[in-house]
Length: 399
Image (cartoon, rainbow, N blue to C red; front, top):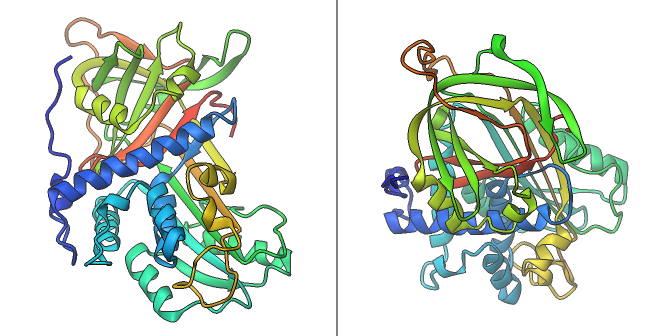
């Protein structure tokens, strides 16, 4: 299909920040964020046969805040893991924080979709966090630092969960597990919630129960949504996958990656890279189509300590970590990274943005795309191409 040309950084150029973000900066941030996002997805997908969903931009904000509290090798590996080291400037230490702040502002100002992301650092009660550091990460990353008494584990769990519950309007619950290590010194927690408000909403009266083929031996009964309209579609012959774009209000969209029937979805997991995603977006072409896709709701919680250590930042978790900008407390290290993401996909549309359905009786019947096998999805900000969520649906009935 003919490639669609676009300027990756167009919308972010208009965002006012002290950094005066350039188009090249915006493009680099998007590409590097996508690189981190897809690397993290491949790691998580390789550890489970089930559903996956993660919000990389939320995690990036939290890890960037931690990097600003680090020094020496610890800071280097944190920025390197995020693939953002090349954007740092020795003579302008606030350059990268300002870029990330501009990114967040540019993304958030567009949202009328239901998207919330929160990140926070929780330090043990004796740890004295530098006031200047607290103010810095709150300003640039909207990441707060709070002290909790981890020796009182149940109270600490409640404090962390209450924090995220209140800041996501009750959408994210139970980020922290039921028990925590009483010896925890420092913990990074991030979470995100997304509910698409489609510009081409599905008519609930057309939703019906149909089969979803989990694998050769397992079938689930799902609520299959339907709409006939003009959609953006592409096909990747090398990977043998279809790419469907579901536009959402507020400048977001979801790509649905649907492998051919003879293709194992795990083989596609291994091929998802930043450039793959960018090329898929460029290939999209508008066409009349009948779309069937299951209604689904996913919530996934992760302890990312081992995953992030394997991605290049083990130093942050070791006793010789340098977190001297965050606190002067001796021997301070990062003990845990918790992350939770929730996504809801149903018929909902935005009244402001919704388009009426195409006339089903005009012309010949369009082809039908039925998403009735495992698929991958990527939620992104259209103007900047920054990935907000990435995941995989193996069984839509499993939350």
